[in-house]
Image 1 (cartoon, rainbow, N blue to C red):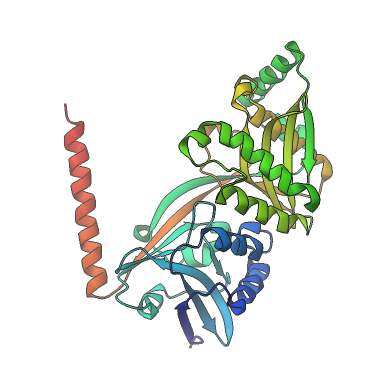
Image 2 (image 1 turned 30 degrees about the vertical axis):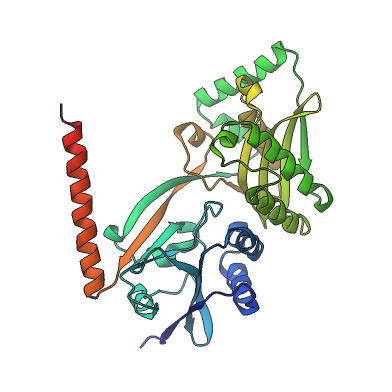
Length: 356
């Protein structure tokens, strides 16, 4: 007989130090090389983007926390994993040897919990939960990409597609023809990291993201969040901003975080006035060359929905999923039926519109 599991659900209080202590223990124990599941990321995220009542949820077995997450109510019937857009992976920690009973979790939630949605489940981090879900409960969300650093940069580069190598040579030759010299800089000290994040924000705000209102800027919450997060990490030598300059003008930048031997590229931007040089891609190539030479980072992870063009750089890919579980009660079965009917009607409407 398996050990009994207790789901504990309570309203989240940002001053609850026990929650953050539990998060740190589980993060270090089971997600040790992923900074996006670390306590610094979560504390910064909650400081800038916590605008709704959240519930802290623990699975306890033999007095030990096996699973930890923050949930919010989308409406009176549906719950979902807390995931602001800055969180590139689902904020859920789990012991890989633990088998969570999601039906029991739904019963433990307050009110009438008919459905729970798990957002951005990563097989590298959440396989224990993914294993409990069937094909109908899982939906493809994104194709993530990684670059494994082994056998040296030259070996890696020769294995890239002919198309990628040809295009990159073309951009490099264009720089030479126009006598344009690029200065590559790495900023990792706590003393200088905040200014580097602010510089990043100024470039991004000038481009298309600025027009959409989604860009980082030193004066907005998103800019302040990344500045605070990377400053915390820089104090532990776990943050780096890579920059490209042309005649002392910043033209491309990438914000990155590090934990153990994995570097995650958080954000990337470039000056759109220099679009013809593909500076973002040239900077990525320079970063990879530097990391291969440095030999301390083993994996670069992008946590993005990679395009075909981006995948040319990858050595590994994996699918990220969303999970949906309905309660095994009248509310859950009714909501599931209504959702299926709505989806059928939507498909029918799309098909009718598509007819000549």
